[in-house]
Amino acid sequence: MGQVADLFRQGGIFMWPLLFFSLLALTVIIERFIVLTKARINVNEFLTKIRKALLVNRNVKEAIKVCESNRGPVASVMKAGLLRYGHSREDIEKTIENAALYELDRLEKRMGVLATTANVAPMLGFLGTVAGMIKSFATLAEQGLTNPAAVAVGISEALITTATGLIIAIPAQLAYNWYTTKITRFVRDIETATNMLLETFTEMDGSGENKA
Image (cartoon, rainbow, N blue to C red; front, side, top):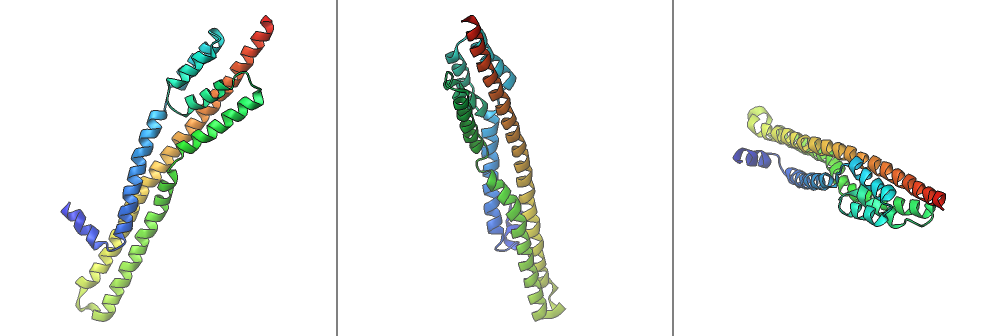
């Protein structure tokens, strides 16, 4: 810890905003990991239960209970659609679309923090590099080559901030890409589930008409 503290002091004033962005990004990474992990369900198993409740048992309330017993965006969107059963197809589709947009917004919440950190942290590091080089050249202009240690202080500051900016940006960018991939999978699952629901409603209505 002592060595880290020394490097932090040597990095100069730009280490403070870099520290802020690193803590902010770490918090978002942990929070999004927990949220996205909890939201994941076995979609195939879930859809099988929904279809059984609707086609075999002819019980919409049972299907709604299946949704309520599962967490995540897929179950929430499906529940919204099930609650509109009996209305026009356009009404059901509009309800599903609004629910999907709401869930997508929840999934993408705070993702901008990771994207911003990945972009800004290297810039802050390079800004610290420029500041450190300016300090080195100013020292060199004043003292010449008689005090190389003083010149090295500015160079050290420049290198430390650059490395710190990259160390922060790389994990932030990796986490952003990984979470974006997971969110895309959720979107695909929602599309699959809602298409299945609409098809099931059509089958239920069709079978009802045939019986009549």
